[in-house]
Image (tube, rainbow over all chains, first blue to last red; front, side, top):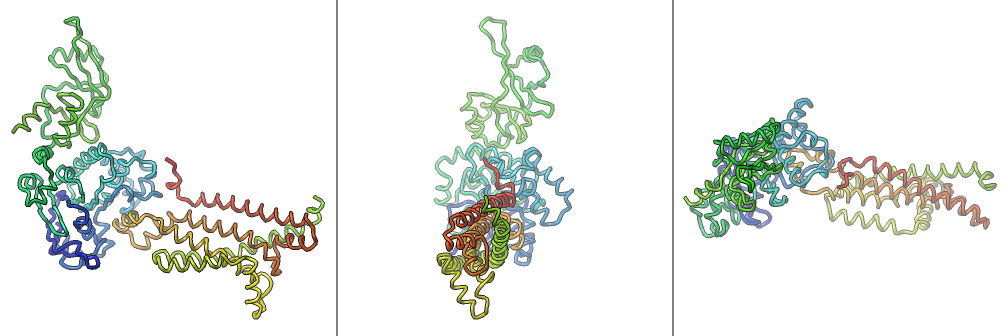
Length: 362
Length: 215
């Protein structure tokens, strides 16, 4: 899809990227990682010709990008940078419509596309007429992603898109982002300096140092067989725990023997249902299957008597959370099972602590 | 009050003349300064030089500047009247407008311009869709400063026989007529304050909505 062939870039006398060859596969999420100054951002910027390489060649679908007009090339490639890249004098709508308007789509088609994209990034259409200054960091980042997808480009370039977001929101954004990628299957080049992010998100990881490629492989392979000391250090000492982040919560979802109820059922009906099935917990879903609460039975001191308790803000985990993220949520909350939802909070099933332990002990 | 009644006709005439001087000199200055600001905005060394020169122009005492104009323009037989006044005020307002245009264009975050470029905007589109809307409030503030400054400097116009509200001040001094001086001074100040207020409203009006949001 994107081939870098012996690419070299010098700034003044300094070599930023040195004879780099890299084949970025179609539909894969490729992470570029390395210490600052390793050339990862330069490498990315060369792909949409924001930086012009000195030697070698870069081919997009077999065509040298030097043969494509840079403005046209950039309109066909999505580009996301940290939140500051949104235009403050444009509404969310106008920001997302930027590339479609540059491509002179008609307004009807643009409106449909904006609605679609806001839905993909789980923002309500009410956001369309807000300005970036009215949004939180996470919301801005979602708009940034929606904007880059504006004209449905095949390729996305993302330069530390979650870098400026706080850790909790970063996890949520990563989860949503993975889920979106499952749907859109774009070829993505993603620059990061966070090894955990690279392992969690990447289909492939390209590790760079001093402008050269040190190792390029899928995360499991890199964790199992780091190419050298540099890669080992980058991975850190907790490699075995990191390996857990290769596993996603969605692969451990249980759907059997689950009791779900609608928010219209009475407590009495729910109690009866639970007792009949000898179960303790029922999850409450609205008509879109969104998780909105949880009931559980607690035996009161007088035997034969049970109490039913409602929790309108149950702790949950997201399907693209890594197993260690879900595990730490469980340990923090003291729950032995958690409901699993997707980015739109639609209920998917549950995950059990025992299953995670079994996975760890393998 | 009696005084005002007596001078009503002249007050109106000199007020209009005062405004006329501003209305001609500021557009001339804008036509020079804004393109100059755009030209120097990507050229930091040149910008430093240009802003230095325009600052020097501004440090010349206004009275002296009018004097220079009279002497320099005398051979052309333009030494007295509107021409020297207009040129002097236009020179005076070069600095605030040029400097604010330069600052306005350069305060647009490079990351934002990079995002625009990365999305496939041409340089022209970046200028019109991003740089200009984001810098217009600052450029407008420069124009406002120039106009308010011009209103006060235009007081000297009456010394070069261009008329304006300065007439009351200088004629008043000559006749030791306190009332006349006061009327002149108050009118100049009131005009400055009023125009400043009006231009602040214009500034608010040209500022893109998305920039006015308070968190």
